[in-house]
Image (cartoon, rainbow over the protein chains, first blue to last red):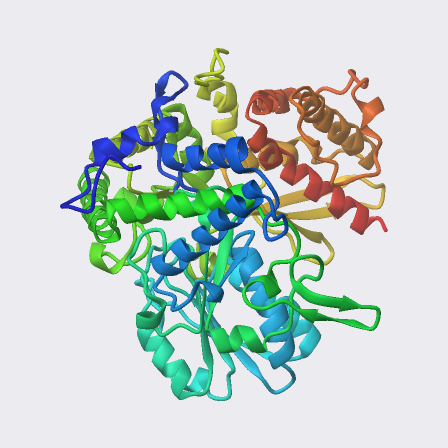
Length: 417
Length: 173
């Protein structure tokens, strides 16, 4: 369990002690991990939960009548209940486990989209979506002949909502991110939900960068579907979730066919299983699911309000520090106000290419992501090919931000700019 | 617990040799050519978003009459493109092919050593034998040899060469 509790602000030193990897060095230097938007590190509690499963209860789920199979099933379904509770879902049966967000939205496109979209229909996306909330719809649109419409992004990195009602007119779905993985922008999800519903459309939310960092309640957000990946929220890779309102999931056809997702199979057809297993064909990643449950426990123990407060205050420190030390030589894309954004800092440093920046940072054991962040349409809006992105999480502190700034100084010095 | 690999850390100086930085800061043959008659071809590195545009004009004798480079990218991809343009300008297509083979051999031999997947986007020029073509002088391009110690950056160095190869293939088709 976490060394800290929900009382008061985050005890970052105690949190850091929970993450074994933070004890290692790289190139002889302390590891400064600033790439949690790509994948977070994992606390000991998550690693232990997965080991414990393999060491004590490893068996296939939903099949065996023997004791350890029952225990494995109970642990996996227990994780589903934890995830449901964590996002305010009314019932665990509304939580479908997937490999990650990408699989969740491909499931949504294939199953809901396949059954509901055709010529004359429209799906509204935004310019700041991750490719995994673009390409599944493009693939389906090419098959089904529906229209894709786009909410633009302004210079501040906010969605431009002036044309929202016109874009939603006749649309069946609005699919947007709750927090941009490039800009950190928090989008007005509730407002978008109300607008979508008023137009007779559904709202699907990419919550990959949101659920790990912000207290989440699917009811308050007004979402109809919401998906996220486990590995960005202290959980393992290979596990994520799609939440959907029960009546929507009930009406959707299965996604992948095989074991687990059926109630009966005859030579002339099959009857699908009930929710959520209708969408979970094949043996699931049991250890990973249990690991995700442990990650939820871990974050609950920290307290998501404390997590969010820590990130707002550290983001404020980072924005201030970078501005003080680099002035006009460094641009952080996205909203300037820390409370309006997550701890995702996409930077442009002088005329240096992000790859070159990240290469120098690596020499200082500072891990940042350089590239287009799977958001090429947004890169075109920003007028850049790539950015160097530092992203903050529960185990980061001001020392990490200072190390980032020092390493950025090294980059300027190395390239003599 | 796993710590450092215990190997000497390849320094930034191994990657960013002075001549590379010189080509980055002062890129040769930067610009555009009227197309047609020049052939215009774009190359992308999907990993990092780097984009390169090669304008290639061949004369009747199958010689690279002129070449210009556009696009944006990191110091490695930009300097590699700059060096490439300087190296192939005025050369016959046979000479260009030899240079390409030698350059990619310098990269791919090392890619195999480090277990990388290689980079054979331009396919048909059988580069296994090319490794033996030691008589090709790479000149400035030798400075990019250090890139192989930074596996992720190999695709940056080969982007312009792959794009050139595609352009030649299209222009001579």
